[in-house]
Amino acid sequence: MSLTLLTRAGCSACATARAELARICADLGVEFDEVDVDRAADDGDPMVRAEFGDRLPVVLLDDEEHSYWEVDEPRLRADIASRRP
Image (cartoon, rainbow, N blue to C red; front, side, top):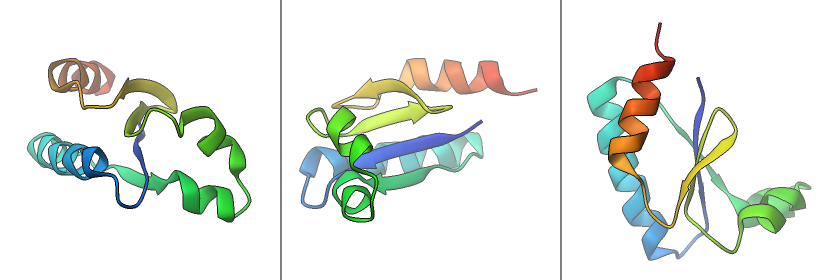
């Protein structure tokens, strides 16, 4: 299972989502990656910014969009639990 938070520097909603996701992941014993869409574009991957850059923050679960603008905590907890062995 992979969990990724797409963000942008200076985004206050992204900072809030990062804190919420960190808390949830700590509770569940899982980790998440964070990708700055602007940095990814500068590093040669413009598609992530083109696809998601207008609705940040975005949570990806197993590389699929799970939620955007905010973390849907009840749904995320349920979906993570359903992917555990």
